[in-house]
Image (cartoon, rainbow over all chains, first blue to last red; front, side, top):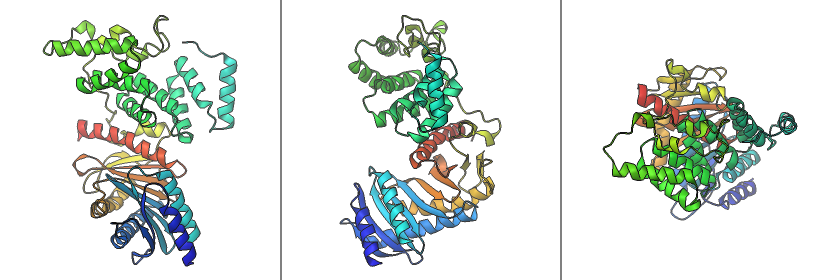
Length: 115
Length: 312
């Protein structure tokens, strides 16, 4: 299992514009495997991204839209993409001009592999 | 403008009917436009862009169609997309120059038109437009004569289908260029605020849209096309996630949040900030490409801001 986690994170972190990728334990919000560029701390990213995903996913489910598969937070200087994988989450932090299509695709593939 | 022979129309039409992803949507939409069937052309373009979201010519045609139907803000938006995809696109640069000229934003108009002139020095319409800017600069206090205030719609509108043969297609007559109306861009028809996004919904672009205030109350829009929920419920529930999105972006040093895209089982949702703490929520089909949803959110944002400016 740890091989799958590492491979998923490794592949994601190679995508152009990705600043970091990690697999996070969904409920606790702690990183299981992480590969981040220098200066990006995986702990806060895992905690905040998982919290936001949980909040928006609960809201969407309560509103009757069903389960949330991916969430993408767009901000002035970058993006956070979170894909649900059962008890795990795949979290990616990317630059503003990253290849988002590829990032989303790889994040979804990683989540499918982990679920 | 020459209308393609019926055999071509039939072939393109059959291709698109057989395969909605067929690139034949573009020549077919162009042909419809030449026939004056702008609504059909618009629908084809929007549908085609669902499958080809980065098709420069399709965005350019959509810009023309919006412009001709008086939807200036949307035309501007489409030209902006064209320029993101193709920064040297002459038609888009010129179109944005004319848009700014119409809006009396002379500085922005000059920037675009001078760039267009550098690309095509012999384009008579660009030269005329720059001349108008020069005249405005010289006579800043002189109002335009009423007989010069012909509708700006004449620019591209008269070129379809009744443009004089001597003029190249899609270029404004010099008189129309000189005649810059001062009326503002059209605002969405919102006698009923629930209908503010109806144009987008009718075009199949989104399923529904809401403008929410800071308290999560619905200001405008509707989610009538989204099964199993009510606008008020969605507004109240999702609004709670906004504060967390802003905090997350800030704490991760990503700056201000610009939007959240959620891919749920039944729909895709996009939330984005408007002015004064208001929020725009749009719902799109589950199978719509993410780029398309983001683009639709951007366009709906323009309509939402116009609504808020005019009515809120």
